[in-house]
Length: 143
Image 1 (cartoon, rainbow, N blue to C red):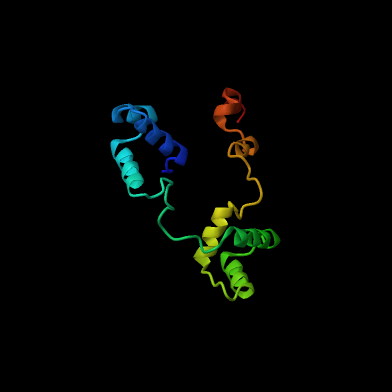
Image 2 (tube, one colour):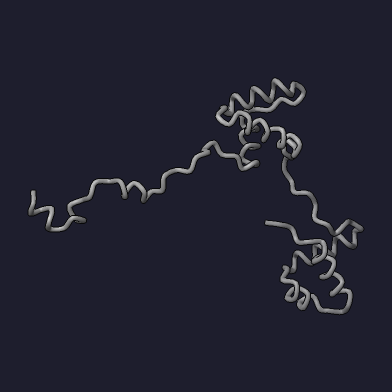
């Protein structure tokens, strides 16, 4: 779930400061009571109202690294994850990554191994032999 915008946070607190009741602010800005209490507590403590960075690890490969990896993927589209990992670790000895890291980065890039459009499922039906039910009684009588 995405964090509320800083603008919404400031407008909600400004409405409360302007004399609106808490219930009006909650209804007007469609926020919960605990959210409003948290914002008021942050303001009283002198903390910024802006959303904090989400918890969790940062990506091992930055956007610059991803651009470099995309160039590699375009140059060697048929290479395996292991081959891409080997290339990365050979060209970046100070920035070792695992195959899973390369796999996650490739997913972040939206890169897929399949490069050709497949035949639509119903295209197979067009080339199949006609069944008895499609031919009707005429096929049964001639056989």
